[in-house]
Every structure is written in structure tokens, then in C-alpha cells.
Amino acid sequence: MQQMQTDVLIIGAGAVGTGIARDLALRGVSSVVVERGDINSGASGGNHGLLHSGGRYVAGDVHSARECREENELLKRLAPQCIEECGGLYVAVAGDDERYIADFPGWCEAAGIQTQSVAPADARSMEPALSENLIAAYTLPDASLDPFRLSLENLAHAKALAGSILLTRTAVDGFELDRGRIARVHLKDMVRGETRTVEVSQVINAAGAWAGRVAGLVNSRVGASIPLLCSQGTLLVTHDRLSERVIHRLRTPGDGDILVPGGTVSILGTTSVTIPDPDLARPSVREVDVNLTNGAEMAPILASTRYVRAYCGVRPLLADDGSSEADRDGRSASRGFLLFDHENVGLGNFCSVVGGKLTTYRLMAEKTVDLVCGRLGNNAACRTRDEPLPVMDACSWTEPGRSAKVWVMGHASDDEILCECELVSASAVDGLLQDCRDIFPDPDLQLLGKRSRIGKGACQGAFCGLRVASHLYDTGALSSRRGLGAMRGFFQERFKGQRPILWGAQMVQSELAEALHCGLLGLEFPAPESPEVELSHE
Image 1 (cartoon, rainbow, N blue to C red):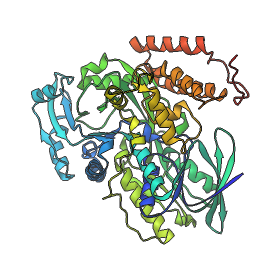
Image 2: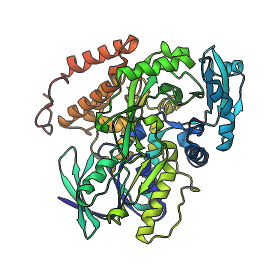
Image 3: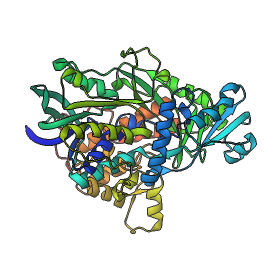
């Protein structure tokens, strides 16, 4: 069993967890971030990538609307490399609530959000995909945000400043208490089964939809608990980019009423389905249908466009009546966040931060670190409100179109393209491995996919999965049957998002992928019992 020691252990490597690591590092505190999957495995990687202006919440949650507006302005100034300032257009179509439309400018003014009325004809000129039935439109300062680059750069900065460490594919296996404090946290490697123990001064629970489960591991000893409502939201990725701006239905928030540009594609969503367990989250055919029906009312092209993938995230919403009943409506729950200090059950070195949004991740981190640094006797002030997030080239491969630009600007004659959809070259993959080797020493297709555009295009990994795996074997990064297992896991993850959208061109694409993966590699058969066995080249 391995032993470690740290000032602060952070559970969860989403936007909030990695943001906490950077905030701590800027105050001179090192941390270990523990994640059961990989960076942004939860809601931070399963959302629109929308930097909210706050307009969506002005009618029913002014506090959240103001928080979104303030953090929107801060992030645009401090992390511009992660943001496309595309702007937003809130539109209403014939039949929408005219009282809501009339009140909207006043609600925005009350929340301090800048908005401007646009004539329906002008709005359709700005965004030709919009419906001919438009009756009202307003511009708002929404933007598109790359949540993967944001989390990677936060963590890279924390590592550079204070030597903070990320442990991926590592789960919390239990807490060891001593006189009312957590003295040690037991961890388990989810791939190798190895265990390690970390001696801690403070523990932060930033596990998102799994925060209640983490608190429950302590609950059996002292009674810590978190009332959470898990709300699944399913989204669709289009083959092409359909709009220049964020398009937002001007009505009470509902399903399929936001279309966000994500570089070269657009993302339509989202639903809200309460589920009892975040591990059960899967995009469903019914949710896909609901999104298409509602989305096509504001942009008819959404009914006939090609979709390359569906995915979902689970919102960790606060159950305001103290319950976590599975049948409650997530639409009515607050989008605010809450920090639990757990001092009411005698725990002075454990806290949990839950709720909130991607847009407010920095504020959530600031409030959490204020509490933890106070407990550590550290009086340093938060600096994330003023300190720009440094640009890290190693984290920039998540940007849509970047690898293609790099390739066009110049490349070696023998630099093979491994991902044709996104033009990711062999040298780009080698660079990724080199830059991140100290963070994820075991080459893995899914880990590379999280840090680049591999598998994100129309073929959804059908070709690039094979080519990247072959390249890793050729360069010695892979040498055993474990690589085949990694390939199987990569394809299974991609198919999970294709299953609900199997019609038209994407059905044909999926049939071709099945023929390649099953006919060529037999990946439908069970994994070998000894993945470490070396492959024979005879």
C-alpha cells in the first residue's frame, strides 16, 4: 500500500474541483485531486459549454442570474482563451407567452444584464436558421465556453504553482477518523486495484452528483449528509455549426430550447429528468425526440440536420426541502450553490460544495477555499477574481479546428494524419503524450480523447481509434493486450452516444464502424483475462 500526505485532498476533478486546486495554489497551498474517472467526467463534461449571461434565470431566480452575469464578465476578462464571445439571441415564436416576452427586458434590467431588442426580420438576417414565425428577439452577452480546456488549465496552473497532483481513475474507498477529524483517506486505483492512504489536513467534497455518496461514506460514522436532486440533461451534437450565436428560446426554461455553437458544431439541449442514481445516466431516445421537437420550433433546420452524437450530464441540484426524492422536478430547483461545513456533526476538516453551474465554478471555488484556508490558519486573500488564467499550450488541443490550423500552417512530410475528421496528426498525439505523461502515465485512448479532438468528428472514432492505437503500439507507448482493452472501452463510450441517434447518415456511419471493429478486431468478444500479456509480432 502506498502512503501520501497533503494539505488538502479534493474529491472530484470537474470545473469546481480543479478551480479549487488553482485557488488554493494561488494562496500557497498544495493539494491532491482525486477523480474516479477522468477530468470533467461528470456534469462539467456533460453540458452545453455555455457561459450564461444570466438571462435564463431572470424570471424566477434573480440571485442566480446576477451571479451568472458577474462571473460571465470576470471569465471573459480572465480566461479569454477558453471562451468564444459569440453573443446570445433570445427568440420567441408565434404562440409563446407574450406576457413573458414583455416582462423580459425589465427582469434583465433588475439583474443588471444588458439586453437589446432586435426586430424579428433583423434577427433572421443575423441567424438564417431561425424560424419564419419569430415574433420577438433580444441580444444578451452569452458566450461559448470550453470546459475541458478550462479544467486542464486550472489544474496545470495549480501544479506549476504548488505541485498539486491529479489522481485519475482513483476512487475514495473510505475515511479514517481520529477524535472528530478525518485523519486519512483510503483510495483505490480503479484499473489496477492498488490501494493507497493519504494523510490529510483538510478534505473537500466537490464530487458533483456523487457528493451525497461521498458524504455518505462519512455518514456511517458521524452523520454528514447532503440533500441532492440528480437531474439528467441530454444534449445533441450536430454535424455542422448551425448558428454564429447562442440561440435561446424566450420562455420559461424547458427542453430543447438552447442551441450553442461549439467551434465547428452546434449543441442542442437540454432535458431535465430526475434519476435516482447518477451512475444510471444515459441519453435516451425519448429525450432526443423531445429536444428535436422543441428545438425545431425556433430553428426548423434542427428537424432534418445530421447529428453525430448524444450525451448527457447530471445536474447536482439542491433539494430545498431537505429531501432527495426521485420524483421531484429539477426545473424548479435553484441553480444556486451551497457550501456545507459539516461542523454541525463535529467534523472540522471536511466540507462539501454542491449545486451551482459551470458559469459560477470560480465563485464556488473561492467560497470553498475561504473556508478551508481559514481552518488552516492561512489568511491569504483569493486571487482568482483578478489573476488571469495562464495560457497553457499543452491544454489547447481541445479547441475545435486548432489541430487543422496547425497542420495547414506547416508539417513534416512523414507526419501522418491519424484523425481525418479533426485533422489530428501523429506529432500532435506525440506532443500530447509528452506534455501530459506525468499526469496520466498510462497511454489510453479515452484520456487522449478528453485532451484533444480525437473521436469527436463525424466518424466518432471509427477510423482514428484504430490509427491512434496503432501509432501508440508502433511508438512503444503500448505493448500489451491492455491497449486492445483501452480501444474496446473507447469505442463503447463513443457508441453510448450514438445509440439514441441512429438514423440517416449516422446510422450508415455506425454500421461501417461495427464492421471494422467487430470484423477486423473481434472487439465484441470478452476481454482477455490477462491484459498484460505481450502481443506477438509473428
